[in-house]
Length: 154
Image (cartoon, rainbow, N blue to C red):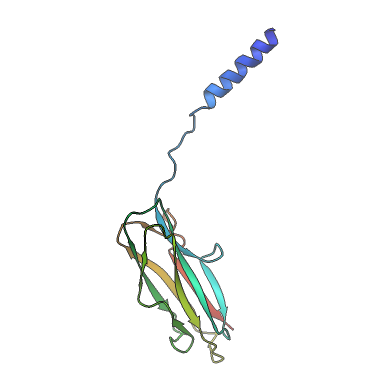
């Protein structure tokens, strides 16, 4: 009987001390990020003739208003629009309607056998701003996945 009382007391004490000891508020900071296959970059073959989709994702509670997200596309000095790639998505703003959590940016890659491998053959898609003050990139000082870098390789 004494052993049962001792075990019962020990379990109650353990349970009592564990409850709320390291309680933390849930993470609830909305953010936007761009990625593909859990990565912030990818490569495209210099002979590719395809349309690729790069998604911007919203991590948030349901929104009640449209979210406007502005992005910028920057090509390195080795890529030329119309020769190496073409933007299929028009403009530089995407609209997330309430209930939508990802929006595509489409790029048509054009085969170019004359690609100079010694130049900067990157295309960078960067999240620039939004109309609701939502964090760009993953929360934290590094702002990971705020940019997506595609490198055209030989």
